[in-house]
Image (cartoon, rainbow, N blue to C red; front, side, top):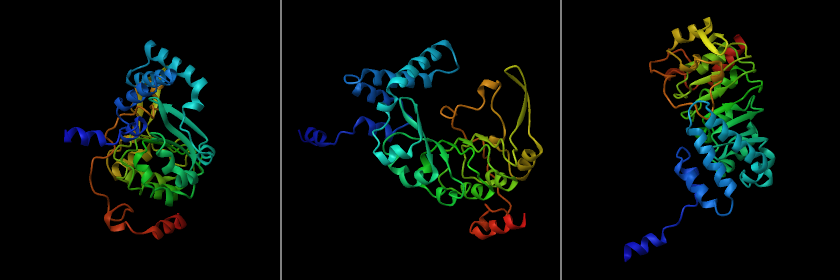
Length: 302
């Protein structure tokens, strides 16, 4: 009797909290769908279909039909199915995207993410960011514990410089990051060097540096949709000679349609880091960790 009394008083965890506590698992999302099925059958069907889409490999007819059905539902219900954000959060979120039935992607300015990110991450399993206006903010952004939950970041056309990459690469919260789009900024060899040297992102598997002053990522040739050859440019070869094999320098595709890789589906691995020590003169070595002024000297002397 006492055991039953204790269990009866244990608080019930609401379905959304269960999703937030275990965002990788399908179970809490399906449980959420079951909980809302009697009042919102379309929402329940949408969640179940998006969960199913994520589990279907390739691009076959079954997957395409499911994608079409979910797109039709979203066109009618997107606004009502997003989190019930208060006015300030609604203004801050410029755009959002669903994955596996819930909002997982948001577009937001760097300043608003610093101010409101914690509140936003309490409303949905957000793990993908399109950030705007982050130039000069990474000295603060890199210290945000919220980054520990983020798996993909796009910071295209942000006017980022080597100094921004210096701070970004020093974050202690980068273990989950797998996918990074830095295209169309002003990043040069020093910034790329900081990214290649850091051990902050052990699971980073894809980086785009297209449209920057330095782009060391693998080039490729194709015949139709088939990728027939791939090679590292000189800058990429120098980085691997200087440090170690770097997974994100290499493309992981056999067909053009696989590029860029799906930021939601990229598998977790530790291919980008294989251990080893950095030169003591490098900014990320143990002998040179506390030197914010030194970077300024490097910029001025460049």
